[in-house]
Picture (cartoon, rainbow, N blue to C red):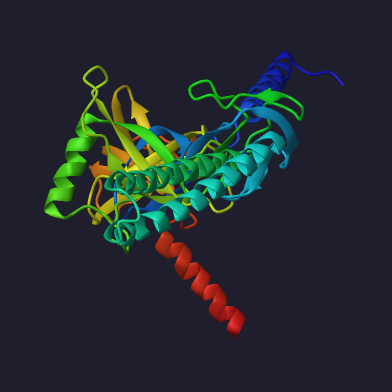
Length: 403
């Protein structure tokens, strides 16, 4: 079949047009011009709770009693009657020094005392008879005076013999070395057979004993915190426990929180002018002996009365150079920039002094949400983390279990 040139031109035009339309249709992007949905973001309401503000300090634990065990008499160690690190009670026998020489000396002093006592009794009888003999002129006045003098001298000799006997008895008792306090004992620094010295000022160190329960914690408190603390104490607004004592809480390096509860015992009588701080001493019960003297610790003391405060999660706080901020949720479901003024951590949450009101919705985790101010969001209530919400959830769970 033969085609005319006009028909061939029309066929070529139709084919080119179909090719162009096909390319445009195939190259179009699906969904082009469609708007992306707003991201789903976990939000949480701003909570208000009754709190007491605390200030934290670095401290060191220390035993209330710390005793060096030293002998009071010299001699050879005969026995060691404890194990290193053992808990001992006041009066427990720790060491025994060879007591044979001290026993012999005590026996000699006791015999001398008995001899002096007999002589004193005889002299007393002679002195009592002196008056009768002088009246009967059986003795001279000079001999009567001598009898009275011998009696007075015998009384003095008796007192000296008694003192020597008592001193020998003490030396004999000191050969048995006992624990002066309740506590935990160190290792023995000398073993059996060593010669120890009981000379005053140069006595041999045998061991140490430290008390365990209760225990002290020392911390340096800065001047501003001290002034705030004293002002609250004067106005009677300082938090206290049931006994009217100011509470203090302790956290060891392996603790998750301030789980140890104690009380403030005293402040030092002056500030250190070089550091601008004053030493605080607090007391903590330690029945299990977990708090060891010399540990590094964190303590906190109350610096406010009980008052309502706004608390938020730490993850809800962002940093814009030197400014802290949160993202609030507007009525049109957009994220809004809100600068805030923060306070200390309270039970794991951050205190907000200015910038938020109770009940406002904020983005729970700024970093994870990846939203910016002005962005549209789909707010979703996060799991409640406040104390009241947790207690409510627990109560509902208990009610369901009862049903």
